[in-house]
Image 1 (tube, rainbow, N blue to C red):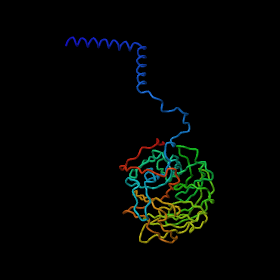
Image 2: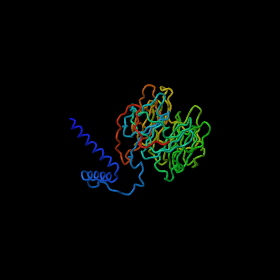
Image 3: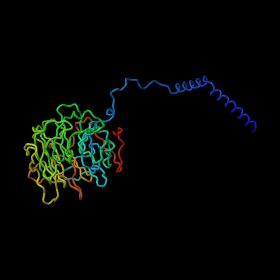
Length: 407
């Protein structure tokens, strides 16, 4: 046993001396590295499977993101979320709908829009400012998630909120304008190209009077007719040409005269040559109707308008909550205060005269009320019409953004 120990000790001393010699000799270190690399080459070497090409100079993040239609929801507390439009199937009139967003206490969905993942979003605030981001920069979420705060994307002042958002595909197009309307009925028209040269910092879009807020913005070609709707069911229609194009910092002109107990609830644009256009009205209690736009004759701006809906005496406190310009082939998405979303075809809503009471459009739960309505984009307009339905997530979960959010 003693001889074995002495033999192992002698071998260890020889090994230590050899390792110390390697550490002290650059030639031996280089030879060992060369031998190891040669061995790896002989065992694993094969022909190259990739090619070296020219640098991808014009590639950006959008080249890696599929273009498809999406729905974007905004809440009263400043939360936003994006979902594939294919999540929502069209339903029959009078149905309940499905939950589109899990909302916190005292929070509710305030606006919904449909757009493409590659479009810009111009987000207009209550103080008349505008921010610009891409739609795909908003994290994609499941139906039950609460969304993320707009503070992750926009730099807002204290008390400032996002009141409307407009999707824009191209800022170079000619004869394209943004038509703005404030809560007090002031209207203004500005060229889309005026909003091209800014990125993350907000800029002024309209100069507001004291106590007024910017509420609605629509994109137009300058030859449309404007339709303004109030909660009391008054509608005014006037030619857009009566409002001349103005710069971003201007105030605008009066569009409608509003009674003290009434308030403006929606703004829309119609083609004066289109005889198949309807305005879909929806009340807070879920009633509404289709009205041919031809029933409203164009008049001068600044008037009080005409009556568009007769409210039911059996439904106290009912009022118009939204009005959407659409055709019989379109679909609308309806959002309630408790986060229920209902998608319906316009053909399922009966066409009636101005003086009628309308029909039940949406069956509401308990004390729930309708908040907003939006027209759905035609999914056939996009190259990728097949949209994968996201797996359900636990309430509060949100998918990670595809791109770092703007500050």
